[in-house]
Image 1 (cartoon, rainbow, N blue to C red):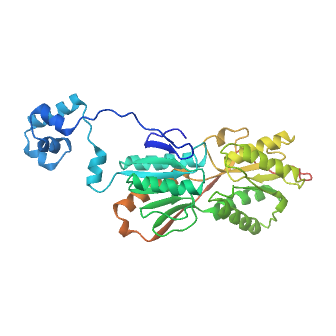
Image 2: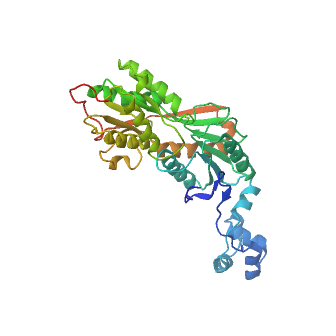
Length: 366
């Protein structure tokens, strides 16, 4: 299970079957506060809940009630109150896993938006397992969440709840999807490398289970054709395995090097795999960027601090997370006012750093 984030009620790992919860303490009831001040529970409730009817209660009495609540460390039962109103003010969030990179940055923006609106969330990691995705959806419904936000999660079907997805190209009825403009992203990277003079570009595709893999690969092929570049099938390697570490990129680059097909640049599926690819290139006795330029994707926090600093296509991941928070809150508040399905497209930008330069004027390095 991943580390618990500040806005989450608890983190559940369906792989291990464990659930981490906050310590349970004896709750001070409203009745106990009322007995302390010798008033009715109804009068105490009006004051503690900020009801307009509390204005009829003398100010001195209100202060006495508030003082008693502080003394007893009274905390209102927000869940019970919310359920009486028909809402729990909680959202279920599904992610493949939580590690450095994509999901963490999206979660940061999502968390900010939810907390600002007074919402908390349950966070579940499903590791791209279809059975766990189904199981986690059912679990969230049982916990009476008001809506679901799914990040890079392939739904076979979705529950009858307000739902927002991030980077899930499959369209479902009554689902709002926050997606990147993959066409623009591919053009930024390919045009940058072609503008530097690279004609032999290797591609590291994402894992087969990632929602972004296929749309981004299609966009790369279109961008290459538009730039009059021919992509060599021998210079296309796919990330394998579900490890969130640099290893999949490292091994993908090793396969590219072993193909003996010449290339002067690599465009990687994400920054984590790009960093792994740089290590493989260096271990082969080549320099980055003089012999092989490398472009990543996402612009994770460590990208600017690599050696060399990584040129990358920046996804506005925090913004995407914040947009998802705004969308789910709107859907919860007024589901009938929104279209059956809606797509919000966000644009990327290219961040040029030190891992790219013009190719050396010689035969392309393999």
